Structure formats: C-alpha cells, structure tokens
Length: 238
Ligand code: MLT
Image (cartoon, rainbow, N blue to C red; front, side, top):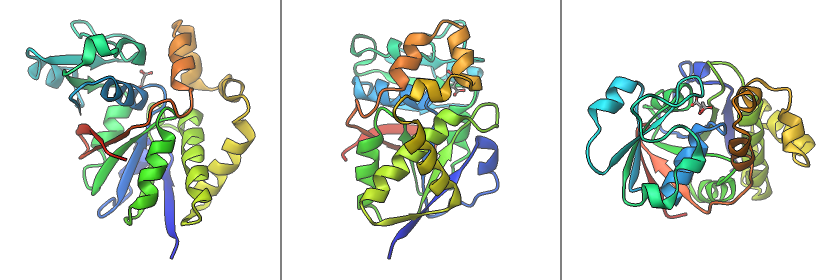
C-alpha cells in the first residue's frame, strides 16, 4: 500500500499536527537546514539546535562552536553566522555546533513528538528521498517558512522531495504535496527567477548575501542524511 506524504506550510502550523509515530522532515532552505547539512558534511561531530541565544551561550566550551542569526544578521559573541559558507572543514571538523536561528531551529523544536526528525534542503534532497523510500513510517514534510508564514523556497524544496519520492511509485501525496510537485516542475529550470520576488530571498539579497543564495539553491551536492530528535542531529547512513 502506498504511504501518504503530508505537507505542513509553516512552523506555526506544526502546533496543530500530531507527529507521534511519524517522521518529520524539516525544510528551511534559506538557510538553517542548509547550514546543518553543510556543517555535518564538513565533519562537525554533531549539531544541537536551541531556541535562545542565552541557551547557546550556556553550552559554550572548548570544542563547541556557536552559530546562528537573528533577523539574518550575525549574533554578537558567536563563532559563526548563519551563512553555510562559514561552516568549512577547517572550522568545523570534530567540533560540536550549537545553532539558534529565527525560524528553522524553532520549527525543529516543535517536532518533539515525532519519531524521527530529518533535515531537508536542496543540497541533500536525493539522499533524503532515498532514505525515506526505505522507511515504513508516515512522513510529514515541514516547511519552516519565515516568521510563521509561508515561504516559497521551502515549498519548492518540498516539491522536489515529493517529486523524487513519486518516481519510486511507493507514495501518494496530500493536496499540498500535489501542488508542491506542480510548482516545483514549473520552477525547476530557473529557481532564482522563481524566487526573485519572494520575501526571504530578498531579505538575504538586500544584506548582500548573494553567495549564500547561490549556495543554498544548489541541487544534490551533499550525499548525506541528517537525523535527530528535534534538537540533536547527526549524520546517518543513507
Ligand atoms: C532561520 O532559521 O530563520 C533562517 O535560517 C534565517 C536566515 O538565516 O536567513
């Protein structure tokens, strides 16, 4: 029997969902989940997501880097901002990363009932889809969105993941999943154009973070599955 994939459109909508016994895939393309995938891929030992700046400072010690942003800007006293380009092998190898961001890490923390939380991005979409195809549990794709509102970049990534899953013939999709596939198919030939009038894309652009946009909108560059429990994330074999 085909498993149904459900979609959640923003972090605000997670509260309404019962994720018990489900795999939650959190997607915050710009930029939290792209950062987590990059840091672990470049050799960080683990990533812990926390809600507040204060909590992050309490966890600071040797071998741990603090990363994140507020309103897309670096946080005073932190080691890294929320630019995935800062999470190089030289910087993160064998380090633990404590990450706090405006939307992505908050969305992740709301998935505490889920059986497993996976990290989704354009960078690792294929590895993630391959992993999901092998599992048997129901799947909820959660678009983190921006400030509790819908964000097209996350929805397109959800569409791409759904479209990869569809090819396996093992899944069916709720109406939002079907819409996400359709929107992805319309947008895939030029994703920058598809996002050029959208809010979060333009916030990052206005702050000069064009290289972050170029980086986060690359497809399938990281063959890595990132799994966790709504706060602690590790690399998992696909
Ligand atoms: C977030 O989690 O709010 C985002 O990743 C913000 C950003 O860095 O652009």
